[in-house]
Amino acid sequence: GQQLNQSPQSMFIQEGEDVSMNCTSSSIFNTWLWYKQDPGEGPVLLIALYKAGELTSNGRLTAQFGITRKDSFLNISASIPSDVGIYFCAGLISNFGNEKLTFGTGTRLTIIP
Amino acid sequence: NAGVTQTPKFQVLKTGQSMTLQCAQDMNHEYMSWYRQDPGMGLRLIHYSVGAGITDQGEVPNGYNVSRSTTEDFPLRLLSAAPSQTSVYFCASRIVPGGQPQHFGDGTRLSIL
Image (cartoon, rainbow over all chains, first blue to last red; front, side, top):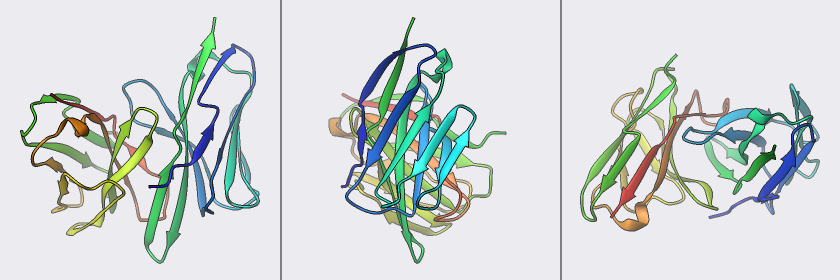
């Protein structure tokens, strides 16, 4: 099955730094989603993007739906310790009630003390 | 605010044993799905259901069965467990297909020896 290309696979940053990660695909999507997963828990939705070009913020998080509908990025500003975790992008394509949600392979964020 | 509840949280099985992973949601969501999460693979869809009495296969359905007799419950059955099914399993739900993004449970970590 198709997997989204998510990069980077891992990041090691210092507290206070900004973070940027992205997902690309060879297919177009109707919706882009960004999730965060903490150890031992399920993914939690951070941001949902529904239109090409859309730029949406949620606190220190900002995400954009690429114009081509084949990519998306997530930025985190001024990182804090609770930002540690794995971030997943997901692309949704839906047609006439049928849909397919494809997840990226994740970006593991670690904050160095 | 229970959301999506998965049981058990951990399970160890021997090859060939059968088991049912339980998933229940109290949000009256029509759409429910099962994913497996393996290292470096993101989340992959196993089976999904768009409503009571309706189920369909996802990306990796082999070795798994599902049923949807009520809106609330969506159990996942392994009829004869294999080591390749060692994974973390997540159940998710949302109101309608293509609607608001999914709510995930906290996962079931399954090991097959």
